[in-house]
Length: 157
Image (cartoon, rainbow, N blue to C red; front, top):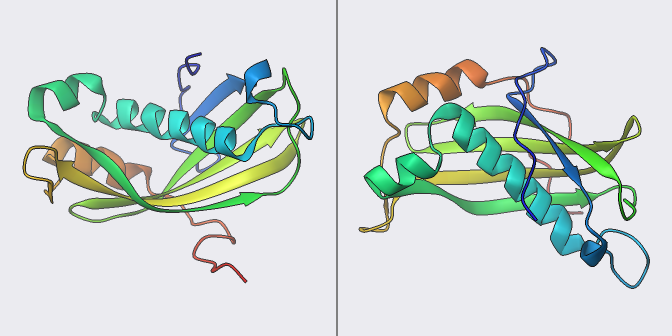
């Protein structure tokens, strides 16, 4: 199953919004979305943002460079059922020369269901080393930076 295309920012401080229907095979023995599939959907949202800023599949093929997630913190707040169409809102909260910090929020029926905060590095896949973003990509990411949500930067406690 593929992810829905990301939509334009909604003016609420989000860099991208993705809508995704929950597939039956993503449901666990408790009758709701299995934890791995929350992360899958958040991954689709990361892919959508990458596409929006110029780091999509064509960029990867042409340059051999991509974003690698090196750290993530997921919060599972409320259950999501089979067939639900969730909305993932993505915020860029910090950008460096070679890294970006994102926060994804999964919404359903007006309620926040899960969040993911992640750090990703821009990596040359051949050398496996970090490299600076191209100028145009860095500018798009910098323009997308918004306020970090209150849960960002928290440790597991």
